[in-house]
Every structure is written in structure tokens, then in C-alpha cells.
Length: 208
Image (cartoon, rainbow, N blue to C red; front, side, top):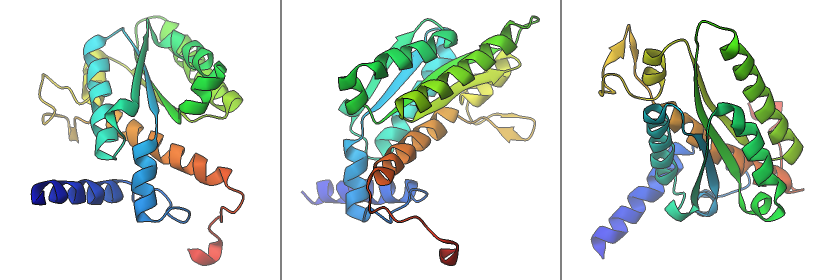
């Protein structure tokens, strides 16, 4: 029992530490931990560049779990490529039940530049499409699409570099951006709930 209590306390403290950027002016500490636990986050990922995508997904899931999101509340769907991400997110959120039950979506894909303009067209279409879906459905959609010049850059940004995330490119350490997207999804989900309340108090310049 003591070990279980210690583990629960450590998870509690870890959640509070990692959500330090999330405003607690509406939630107290315990409410924030419980709010994170009840969040439902959907990951919509592509099947292209599977090694990179799986690493990004792993970073998302591990970070969501560290933020106290229940593993059963981390949902996953896939589509062929990045171009299909806006459509998939829109179709999912068009279902009233899904819209109600999902707090945020993390759209994960990878676009690697070739020698044609195809890369620019797809990148712009996907980013604009996801933004429109987010605004039209009033739901946080985290842009988790890597736009890279080459495969090495994609591996670098997904925490992979010759199979070793501790290696570096130049002076920059390999970093899994999936972790950042997970934190953004949790913060936007919590803030969305806060903004929904009529008695939510915004910070004033006097508070700075």
C-alpha cells in the first residue's frame, strides 16, 4: 500500500509540474489532475513514413500518460497520407457524438521535400485545411505534421537519429516533437473548458 501511495503521489506531482504552463485560475491542483485524467485525446496519424510516424506517436502517448491522461482515453485513427488528415478530422468531428467526446485531436504526418513543387502545395493545403477544421468545429487540432527538407531532418525531429536519440545534428540534440504536441493538446483542452465557463476570469495587466 505504501508503494502504491508513493507512486500515486509521484504521478500527481509529475502532472502538476508538466502542466505548469496551464492556467490554474479555474482549477485547483487536484481538479487539474482529475481534469487531465478525464481528457479524451484523438491521434490521427498517417501511414506514410511509418518509422517516423510511430516514433512521433510514441512520444505523444508517453507524454499524455505522464500528464495523467488515461490510456483508454488516448484514441488512435490512421489515414493514408498527410493530405487526408483535414478530411479525416472534419469527418470525425461532424459526428455529434465524437465531437462531444473528443477534447482535442493531434494530427500527425510527415512531408519531406522533393525536387518538385508538390511538397509546397501539400504542406500549405494540409496546414490551411487543419486550421479551417479546427475553427469550423471549434475544437483544438494540434498541427503535428513535420515539414522537412530531407529524411535525416525528419528523423531528427521525431527523436530518431541512426537509432539513437542522444546523437546530435550539428549543435542541436535530436528531439521528439510528439512530446510537444501532446502537451499542447492537454493545455488547449483544459483552456477550452475554462473559456467555456461564463465566470472565467482573464488575467489583467495588473497581474503581470
